Image (cartoon, rainbow over all chains, first blue to last red; front, side, top):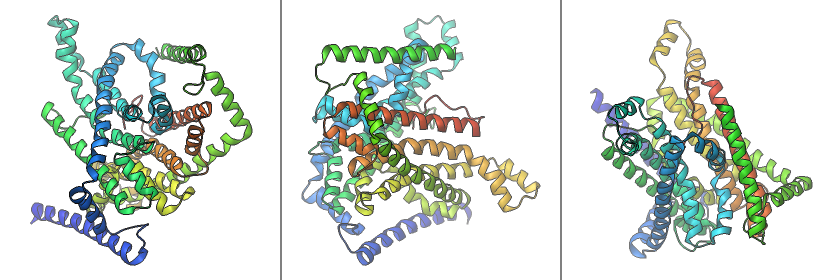
Length: 260
Length: 256
């Protein structure tokens, strides 16, 4: 009775919901719409995915190109965002001067910058990395800032009473205390970075998952379109999970760090 | 203290603009890469006079408004039922989670295939983005309601409707507004992407048009306008949040 049954019922409902939805999709695609330029059955999508992965292998170059861009943009965002967030947290003057620019850049829809960045960096890797960077950097920067601001005052006072030098204070107290926040920011940045990849590859790219999706959209190739969308979703979930595992490993004292 | 902040902010903005103007005037003879602020302002003025700006701005605004309001209504209702009934939550959960984890802009081509390049497809894009954020947050708000309040409602013999209206909805309101705030930023991105991809009006269209004709001042006007819209909507929602849920300390900017 009770708990185990409840769990069983839960998973039953979930599986039932997914199965019902998929079969509805199949029916709709095959019997109602019956037009492969509008919608195809999930079975066709799975078959296309299988072909692209194991038979022709045409998904890999796209996957590789996208990961490359994502990786560089993401690393650059961490390298630039964390120190800048720290500096802003530690110096109110710097914060006040940077703040208006930051707030503007952050609240502008990122896509608006894409044509400008394209103008500056050309259609090569540079502009794409810049777009991903712009997407990732703000959650990381903002969370580093809050992480540094939210350090418990008692820790700082303790450090003072031990007469720690400023550098030791930073390394031993401030940095470890703000790491959970930074990691939460990095977790948020994963999704935004992926969106950035999609935006970047839509402007003048010749390969990559974003290119795949937009090209399929323009040629009305619905099966490939679905495969591309699914690939993005899976990568997002995967990246999110990796960072969360890493979070649990690095900051075991915190089950779930609060994002800013 | 806040006054000092404002002064520094203004100084920073003004200094930035002056440096930008001087550098572009001195270093670049071609306005293509970075047009100086003065020519951006001139272009803005010209577009405003010709009514071009107004047309594109209203198009985007209307698309955004329709999508956003319908998403709020539908999202709150679905989220409410997900929070109230366990079974409904279980049924919806896999689908909402899937929708949530797909980067919005990758489904835009699909939505354009289905709904055409007109206004409907943009409204749907805004709707999808906002609805998911609001559903998730409303459900969380209903679920996390303090049980003491429900007991209070019981002891006051409130009817089901009154409990919903007086206890559950206000209790979930801060969450709902958080959902709206998350929705606004993303929906703005979504509508611009959809307009960039295929449209004949809207700020996204303007963005594409100006970048493809290498009209940099116009491009910068659009970018700055989008920045202003983003900033304004963000501050509006933040105000709303502070008013509706003053006990929740809201951050200066919040990571999505």
